[in-house]
Amino acid sequence: MPGEWYSATQPFPTKPPAFERQGVSIDDLIDFTPELRAEAVKLASLYKLGPIFTPPVVSKWEGPRAMLMLPSTTGGANWQGGSYDPDTGIMYIFSNTGITDIGLVNNPQLSDMNFIRGTAPNPNAPPPSSTAGGGGGEGGGPALNIQGLPLVKPPYGRITAIDLNKAEMVWQIAHGETPDNIRNHPALKGLKIPRTGRQGRIGTLVTKTLLIAGEGGFFTTPSGQRGAMLRAYDKANGQEVGSVYMPAPQTGSPMTYMLNGKQHIIVSIGGGGYSSEFIAFRLPN
Image (cartoon, rainbow, N blue to C red; front, side):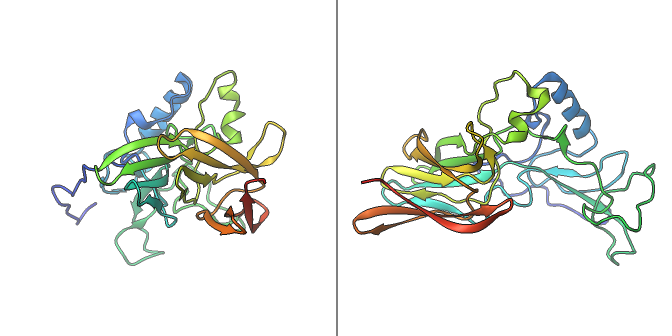
């Protein structure tokens, strides 16, 4: 950006390894089919790609319209944090994979600063209606998706186990059922797409043997129910050992407590038209 200078380098932590993708390259783009891949490459060519710490650019409609940043402004990890096992020294954390576009525009009508965040408008677009609803960023650039599919390849949500004593990754899995719009997308008909994971605002719960986490979004079960799953994994290797249905996605982190000699797990759920509530589980007698 004109008038700014940047350090020649930045601190790049190398150990433990990053638990989420950092920066955007062509290799990160969706590749379910050659056609979708070609569309993704074409769209990405209008943006600046680069490693983590790539600075934003002054937006031009003909390109670059913005810098693509991964993780997005919402993570990566977020306020839910992770869970730590004091017996093994292993930390477990959920993270999102998604892109944010960051462009800069000069707009004296909105700010006396030289540049603010925004996207250059399409010079060929009709002027906006004075009665049109608000929403979208400055300039209203195109959505960062390909036929409604994410621009980047999955997984879109994952859980990572990190050994803090050795500063090494123990395992990493996609967490969250594949969203309905991906499973039912006409461009993917006939393809077997592995579980993609999905984004969410969720934390994890670690016990003596298990790592427990709910899903962060709705999907339709084989029986036609709309809801989400609370999943339990073997904390040693990430293998799923069980799951139970919830009528809505998890928000925040699960917790566990003992009552009358039985262990309970309680989860905050809600969203998508479902009123928020706590739901508790315990093993049968």
